[in-house]
Image 1 (tube, rainbow, N blue to C red):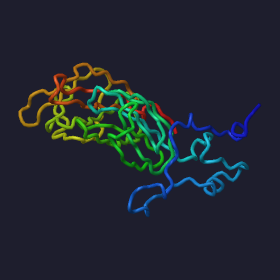
Image 2 (image 1 turned 30 degrees about the vertical axis):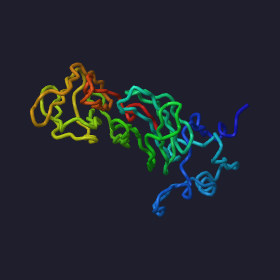
Image 3 (image 1 turned 45 degrees about the vertical axis):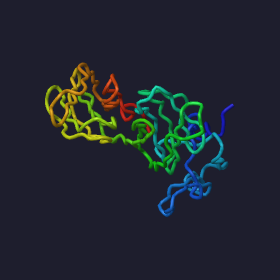
Image 4 (image 1 turned 135 degrees about the vertical axis):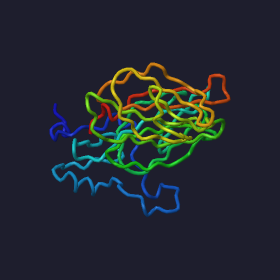
Length: 268
């Protein structure tokens, strides 16, 4: 039997594992005047006048109408050097469980607004390693990167820049997410392309040819190679980020984690 949503060509929210935005009164911030884009039933009636049944915004069935509904994508990346996994809570709800160092979660669809991000060691909610708010806007692809050292966890909200991706070229950027790394220069195929990268800097995208490449991160002062990825393969029509992570005092040192960004394959 065809559902009401199917009949209206409306897509249900994928699993609705990511919570709805916080209401204004739920924000523990001093200035609430800039809290906008809240989803109210009245707004739904205005946007979808053809829908007779106004969806309950606390339920798990949310309308996603291609080209109309304002939403974004978000995922988490654990770049916090630790042997212990973490649990990530969004607005008090367990959203990502047992996330390991260097691991990415999947992408979720999410609506614009404010969200409270809390991170705990897996299975231990006595003290949050991180407790912060983020504000999302529509039609963006976000990565929330957990970073920092020891008991000082921090996070960066990284926004993929939406742009046309030509099939015969690729984009790549550098994210300096090692909290104790020195100022670095990035060498792409042995040519200096970015200078003085500091934590937690996210560079602009670089336009490059497809195929095999080499990336070296050098100490800005001494020129010594701190970490190298000698065999990077880039495909046309894709955007990538090289995340430089790790603890300089650890025997493993810095590492480069290369990932294809969501703008390469996610659709709105």
